[in-house]
Image (cartoon, rainbow, N blue to C red; front, side):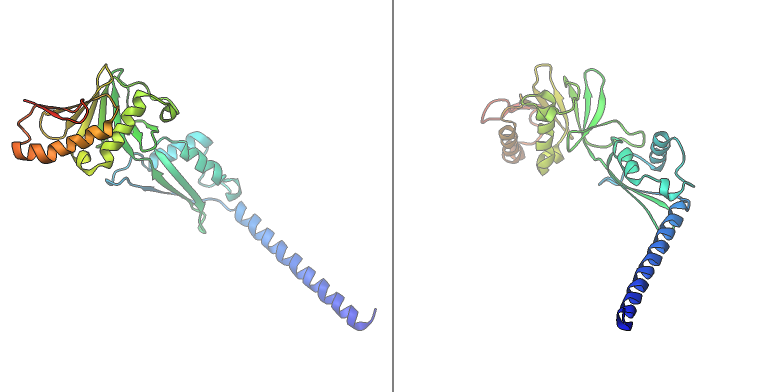
Length: 258
């Protein structure tokens, strides 16, 4: 082997030794980091649009303690299962999304997005709960009562997959609530939906004692449109207090009941 080839080989050996040394340092640093202990759990819960929260910091800590069986503070970083922690938190009915990471100071950071209730169900059997925009069932919160549209009456129990059913009274009720909430006029007007034993819907406005008989869910969108026209054209001339009830059950018409 001539001198030139020897120098090349020495350079290669030097590079390999350097890379090996760097790898050892990285592995050592990672192991040292994983052996270091966690400090605080920092929790950031995004409030709902009205500024309120269904859950608080203590609720999150209780869920963690109950699921893991031990405190995460003071635990070696290598033993903190971030993905498992996210899954556990997202199993909470109030949690839409949980994002967990460990910062440079060894703090466990937890970001929580809450599920937002849009409808409160109070059925004839005494069941009392919320539905969110995906139709997921939420229990009542011990921290505050969400001011949302309320539905009462002959409502079947919540079951998983009810929105996939071809016909289901809770599905009809949920879809009717969405029609109301998505329309600025009816969102401002209606505060309560009652379901009769015959499966007919009665809308109760936020102001006054007037009732709106909508009938069965069929053609609900057309019935609501007829009601809007009646309110905007008829009641503005004659006064909102002229009728004790409005009947929109029949196709293409709204009848005022004095």
